[in-house]
Image (cartoon, rainbow, N blue to C red; front, side, top):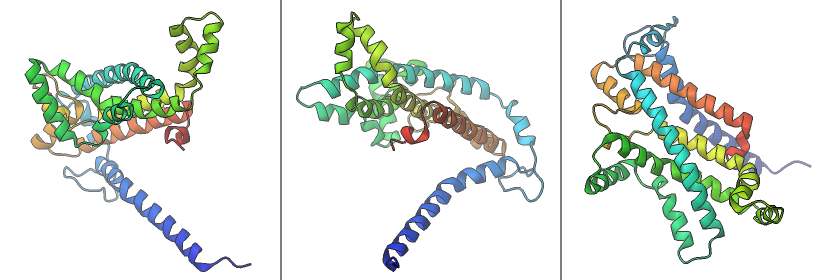
Length: 268
């Protein structure tokens, strides 16, 4: 029996739109990698010959290593703090029975819905009102707010499927409540912790619109430092650094796939 033509056309159109979307999203990354391999000192794709000269110059960029280390330190701190705070907040949202519970849950993930420039400007004014003018503490606090929504979303979804009777059963076997949480709940929710932590770490490491308001001349994260290079000496070395960041992202996704699986990370 022949299948109707209209569903086949609809399926073909869906696949075409999927392929077009993937190409549209990946094209800038492919261009960045290509420019990093070009021997030309201007931003253009290689024409026949490939060169690694711009990667050799990466290590000689002034201020790059401190910027990378600062971004790693800030992202690691923000991820660790958000995992602790996000776990407690997610338990309260899932298990709590208090007015405004859904509003609080929405508020905790609201940084994902607001423009980064708005959040950055608001944080700058708020920190100044509190008398906090040092760049490093401001960056650490701001990046916790950046990472927390990623942790909250994954943990709320994970806790919604978790059977809290397992903790009660562990307590009847002699464990205290904190030990029951560590021995029972944490292993079960490990995929949620890993997924939220990985995406949150990348979001913090790559953040620009919020960090730009809080850095100073002594504390510049990697995206801010790259912006300075782009203004002072725009050459394909910046594309080489960007390619290394892309490789770091792919490495994180690979680790997540080995530990959790991409389907579970995507929530499929």
